[in-house]
Length: 103
Image 1 (cartoon, one colour):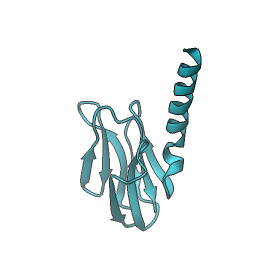
Image 2 (tube, one colour):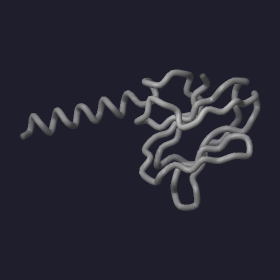
Image 3 (cartoon, one colour):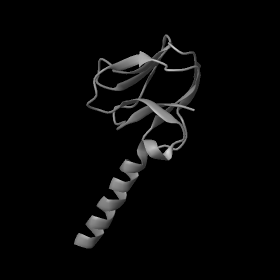
Image 4 (cartoon, one colour):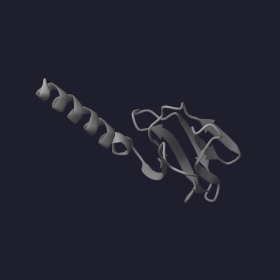
């Protein structure tokens, strides 16, 4: 029983650690359930992909110019909200970690 628990815990830890490293691109902004607002600007012109930690596929891809608004903030009900230009995307309440990555 203890071995099974240790093995399951180890697999979960590896999956969580793989998070942003398993997706292609350079991480520009990150947010988690306890993060505050983290909004800045796109450091360069290019395609920015929005990922959750548990997905190898982006939630969306946006073409941004250097200086365009980009990042994350908390919604009024505590969910993570991705922001870019004048748009937003709300994640489910249980979303653990999210990333904007320059492709």
